[in-house]
Length: 68
Image (cartoon, rainbow, N blue to C red; front, side, top):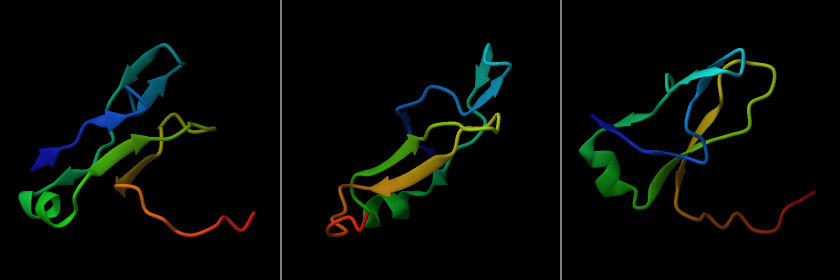
């Protein structure tokens, strides 16, 4: 299993905004990395939870124009 580097954030869990740790992650096997080029794991903005949401993205996808 391969643990991808986390982009945009250093930690995924915080305690009282002082302590941080990387608890949440995607683990991928070699086949995923062969099938999906430029796969990246991003940390998103945290809201009310003490965990930061993460998203797995495969390169720059063009989904067309934004509706809003």
